[in-house]
Length: 431
Image 1 (tube, rainbow, N blue to C red):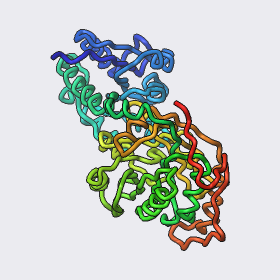
Image 2 (image 1 turned 90 degrees about the vertical axis):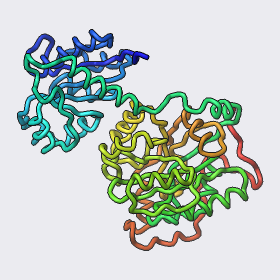
Image 3 (image 1 turned 180 degrees about the horizontal axis):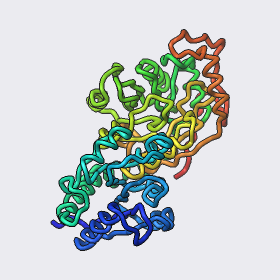
Image 4 (image 1 turned 180 degrees about the vertical axis):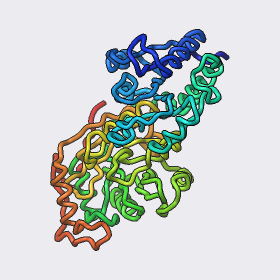
């Protein structure tokens, strides 16, 4: 079967009709791809990049020498597609490599495959922007003897390899149909109890607060521990009107944190990311990556995130404890282009923050139904002052994560929402 034609934006780093190595290469490649039946959108410096990208559904955006100011740089800012970059001339750009390198690194972090036309170019880039760079066309540059069909073959393989890494859109139709007839509930997927070293909220206080705030399910994600979640599940089963997903936020050896949902046993910290994910799978759990781009948290870097993209079941696209909005926006962008199910959680370390972010989903039973329910989740946010909840966390834990927690005197549930009378069951929203 002939592979379906692709829709590709080729983004030139010069004005329309401009010359240069990158322009010649991009033009020749675009001609060859069009000859093969692919749809190619050519964008040049000076074009309305944002409007042109937004106006089409593209499989890929291929940028050439995406250094600012250029259309290629602007395309990385506005693209929600998979991005391929080709770097051409082996010359240092002082503005990009010295003055504005931190900003350039952010935008280069959106590149899903990096290619070069010369080995020397790869050597230069690896010095300032470490990553893997694939040499195209045998490293011959874009000279007249370049074999454009062979280069197009290489690029097509890269394009289709990236597209194959996207998650399937269909999910599990049978499970989706099964849950569609169930009532809607609200869930918060990221929170901590006093079984975490940096939290002082007792389990019973957390459960009572969650019930009072109308949550139908919560995931308790203590750091490197499941004892609090297991205790909470037992209490919730006695109450009968709230579900507890047993989870754990695990610190890996060198690749940041990852959450396992639907666990039964504690996963030790300090394993590699691959080993941690394997243990989550062994227990029949789901892989949930929290605050993936927050550079103030322990997170996997972009390269490690790309290494595990097929294994990620859910990606946290909103976390109110993230200091900069742009970190959440990067998560939305990543989830969108790889079709990863988006999720959100309050990451509450004090009861006052519980439920500040929640998802409205159909009621579920087990990880398969939960994942299908999350595909259609309606994420809502409730304003909570970040300084306020962080100050409470500091006061309750002495501000030092490894120090003994303060005893919260006479801890009680934090009221909010519509209180329930004892024995009154949770009201569910109508579909």
